[in-house]
Image 1 (cartoon, helix red, strand yellow):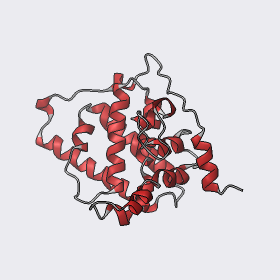
Image 2 (cartoon, rainbow, N blue to C red; image 1 turned 45 degrees about the horizontal axis):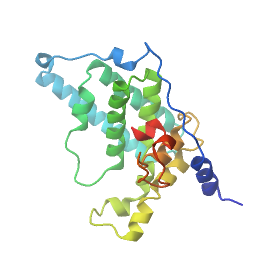
Image 3 (cartoon, one colour; image 1 turned 45 degrees about the vertical axis):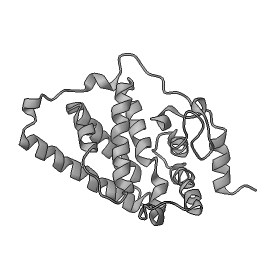
Image 4 (tube, rainbow, N blue to C red; image 1 turned 60 degrees about the horizontal axis):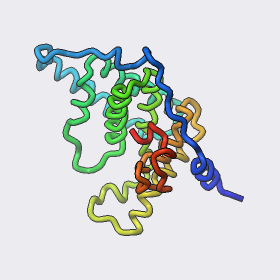
Length: 220
């Protein structure tokens, strides 16, 4: 019989992704406000930097516990809603914050936060609704969860051996296993996690799927 891992992989391999249907008039982008340059005072910048550090700390706590506690989904949901709220008040702020200097060592929690931020911005530019962007932002946040189990690889940035590369490319399946069946996550989340390193031209991994078989959120 197939192991649980093999069963999930078989299910995801045959999944045909549905493209999110955009609803005219419900675009989240309609809510976005613009803050003028003269209103970007030093006080404003300090406040936003403080909020960024708060998001970063929340993200570290989420990765510290993964799904070991019952508040996992609500924590991710609340954080993405918070990012969307900041974005709606200042349409430039998320991309600005995402460009803050990163630590020299790869941080899964920081990468998750910035991936969610950039995905929210792209989703808004594509005309998605608030509900769709919430789903997208949550999927983006967990998209590289499997990397949390690759510390021996990402803390050594030198050229990867073939063995390490094979291990690295297993992280989408690890992440999909973590997310699959977690109550409260978007229904497409495990598929998006599984496909996030696929590429339109079929050169990605783990299954070298081409564009029409890749979920739109995974492409973003």
